Image (cartoon, rainbow, N blue to C red; front, side, top):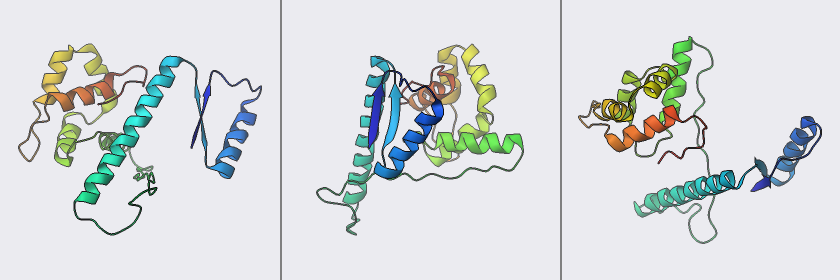
Length: 178
């Protein structure tokens, strides 16, 4: 469950808010999300609903592939699950950055592992790529990433290049990677 606080919560000490959010989570398994503008609320709602729809679609696709193993299917059986991989914490800066960047790329829908590996070869350091692509013409950047050929012979393509470029050049963190 999510509790959306519209506007700034007027609590004098942040420790009180932090303790309150932990207490609410422990007792009710609810998270507090603080949103200050209507635009942020609309974006948050759109992203959340889109995420739910994607998960439902994947669940239906997996169920129609002959996976009749019971589980959470049927009416009222909706459960959200998160599967995350823990990244490395000990290593050189380049190893940690590459691991983090690889994990970021796995969040992009319909990006194959072969394409992800090709992108990791082209862009080993996303921080340097942010500077590079922010200064580069958008169409040239799309062309550079889109023309990349993965080990299976498939190109990354312009739509996937747009997603990656959006991820790298977004200044606010509010862009929806579609």
